[in-house]
Length: 172
Image 1: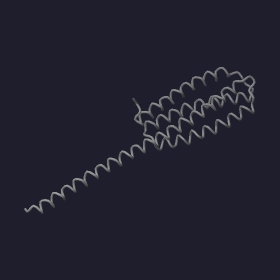
Image 2: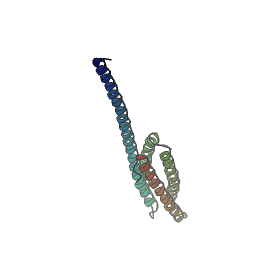
Image 3: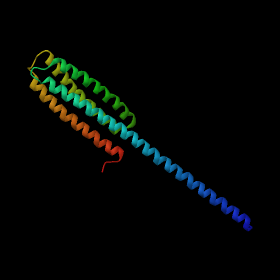
């Protein structure tokens, strides 16, 4: 083999090696960018969800306070209920994005929050109904049940935060 052919063959091998390395580096970079993109979308979805939960919980607390007033201001209570319903719808919309973006562990955490929220909402509905009927016979029982449900809901939200941190790689 003459020197020219050897040089040409060496250049071809070097070019193929460089091209192969560039392809591998490009794929690795694309994969890394995709992971970062996915993480950012999840982070945004989880943040929006937690923000919607926070706003809804403030509206929920306002209903609980208004329903326990003696006597309750019914038009004000009804306005607080309307505000709560709007906030609950925002939570539902945010939940849908979290479900689309998140893994099964996140979906399970949102299901638990929804279950605890539903239980507290049922108690609130009874409290509002009783306020409209001027019935105070179960006020103490409803207040105790609501406080218990609020604690359970708080734990469910805390569990969601932990799951979200884990999914996002912030578990340490």
